[in-house]
Image 1: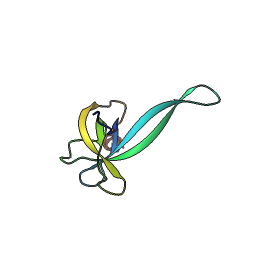
Image 2: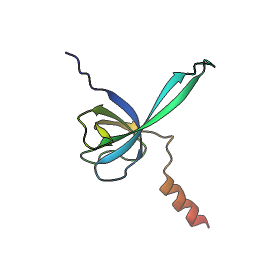
Image 3: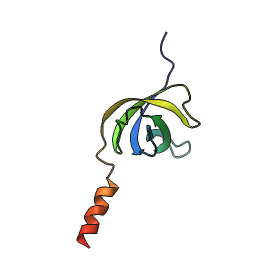
Amino acid sequence: MASLKRVIQGVVVSKAGDKTATVMVERRVMHPRYRKFVKRFKKYLVHDEHNKANVGDIVSAIECRPISKRKAFRLKAVEGVDLNVRKVDAKESVEGDEA
C-alpha cells in the first residue's frame, strides 16, 4: 500500500528553539476571477532532531504524528541552499562597519 503521508518542500526561514525549524512552503493557484497564477505561502514547524537545517536551506519534510501543538512534520532531507534568501546578520555587520 502506498504511503499516505504528505511530503512538503520549502525554505527554512527561522531556527527558533532547539530541534525546530520554520519552513515556508510556496504554492501557485489560479485566481478564480482573473485567471492569473498567484503565490500562496504557509509556514510549517518541522522537527529537526539533529539540527542539520540552517536559515536559507531548501528542505523536504514528511508528515508524522503530532510532536507538539503546531509541529507534525519531521525533517526528511536538506536539499540545498536557496540563494534568494539573504543573510540579515551578515548584511547588518557589513553596514555597521561602514558607518
